[in-house]
Image (cartoon, rainbow, N blue to C red; front, side, top):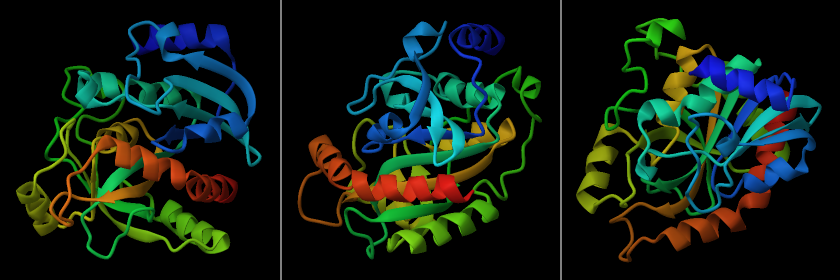
Length: 267
């Protein structure tokens, strides 16, 4: 399937990216600030899942940003949209086949760490993935990478150093921590947040981890940055809403874009 998808993509563009970027909630506007070479809708690619979540346009954007050749996912797909883990990571594998060797994953998350506040940016240092099925569960996994990939250094130490230096240059108070993915679409219960805190998670969301697993499997060097859009359930005495997530993501877009631009420039 990937071979057919790449063949179709190459009918739209022969662009070869260096860096692949998944633009999470609030970051979609970054794609329009690149020197655009081509845009390809997911719907134009055979058997490709299509984004249905708010703020996710659902297309690949190819171009130059901060002097680097990039391919950006202007919107990702999620498990809660009804897709399988294997479908969700299709775009990650395609961007690797296009030629990109570095992958920057971004997302919106709920803060579990009580020192976090809405609007904070957290560098992902590690993740917890045992709550979602692995995208590598397939009889053909070894056609893309090794059957049993090592996960001891998912988020590259070199890239983490670059993110820290970029945050300093941007004057951003960067947090760091462990991100955990659940499927959603419901927000977590207070008991679930207590459990994840006890497990060592600092932030929770509904994406990214299976993308990182697939990224390591197919040979990417990976960096991850999460925007804390709200405090997780039970930390404040108020209900959570998707509108709150979207509002904070949009308010923090300028700061988020500034950091990602600097990271692209530095790596």
